[in-house]
Length: 189
Image 1 (cartoon, rainbow, N blue to C red):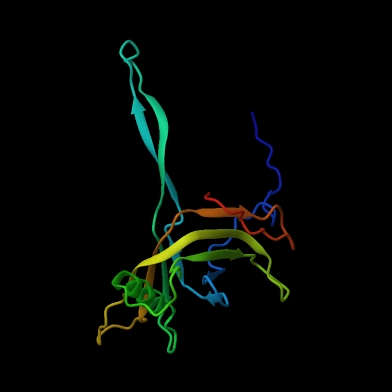
Image 2: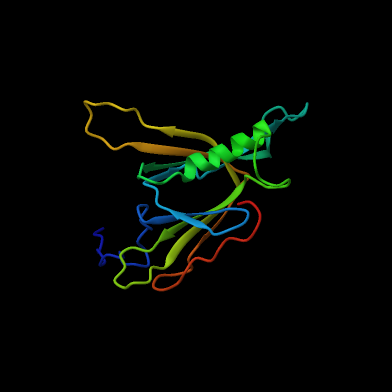
């Protein structure tokens, strides 16, 4: 039996979002939010442990139940730019809290809310719609690292910031065009 081909269904409404156009905003407990460009972000995932349960007399299968949820650390990478000390200042703030040598008042929190907004592409106008939005809750740095220095290499000097956190919210835009994804509500994914 012959198959009749139809025209392609590919159009903006069916195009997946691009992963290379995004903005990261770090919100300190007090003060102005900081917009930072990163070249890559990894670790946006949730894992739920499985609890296996079996009773005598029902030994043919194992009942599976959801256990505790865990959120992987998020790794943000970027090229080192002159004058930018955001990552090391945040780690130094945490380190001073751990040592008890900080200069902040009692009750100052080193945790931050971090927004990651995936932007629309292609865009033919000056205002760029937000197509997906992650809000990471209670994030703090577990590691700040720099790439190796090598006089024989032809590479960029890279800084990595690894964040522990207590979950994230996620939303995606309802449609194409100027439709924006809204900020996720409080709570975890």
